[in-house]
Image 1 (cartoon, one colour):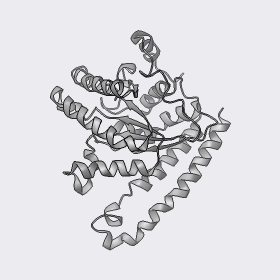
Image 2 (tube, rainbow, N blue to C red):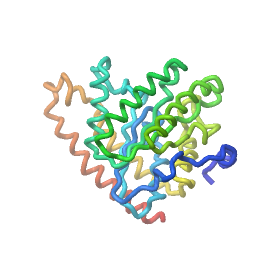
Image 3 (cartoon, rainbow, N blue to C red):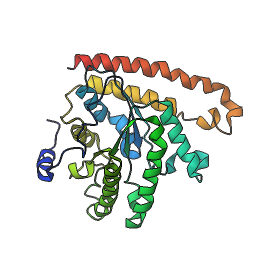
Length: 284
């Protein structure tokens, strides 16, 4: 079993479903494009692949694609995405929103709150305001929105840090209820997350939490998981090229002619997705 000895008891103790929504947000439809937005918890998932593995297996037989737009250190104000416009919130958000719209999502998973929680109780109103603004900007996509709380801090930083983080978790749930959005409460349902430093989940931590997103532990399929990780790596280089300042920024006069090569990742990502679908069908 992939679930730890803590997980199922926790589910029974809290006496609540994985999501505070009548409909299962992760029972996906054929043709869905799922875009994940958030900070480190989201970005690092693309290297573990367990969440996508579990959701792919849960929705086997459907043509579903995932795109990870997580950015370590990010907040609802898109502070990590500013590049050279780091002081301009409108431009920071525009970089996130524009790319999200370009991907034509039908489902958007949003996970913020951990970084913002270091501002303490006084930072909750700013977090809530930023979350509301982000949701308003994403509304034109007409995608189904899923709000997700971050996991708890690990033993190194708990319990003091978790007392504050719970305020941000509550803010996420309140916004979800007000807007009638699905809410995935990882803070409550993972009482003892496996972390490497009290903050970031280990691969085992992702594997255990994957069960909460799919409703069941992912089946062992290392070949499929590695195919997912390979696809995620290709897409990462597509949307975050390492030398983007030279390709698209103020130094593009030096190497901008090479920018055409970035789009060449698209057929590679498409090919990788075909392999994922083939392997997923075999793993049923």
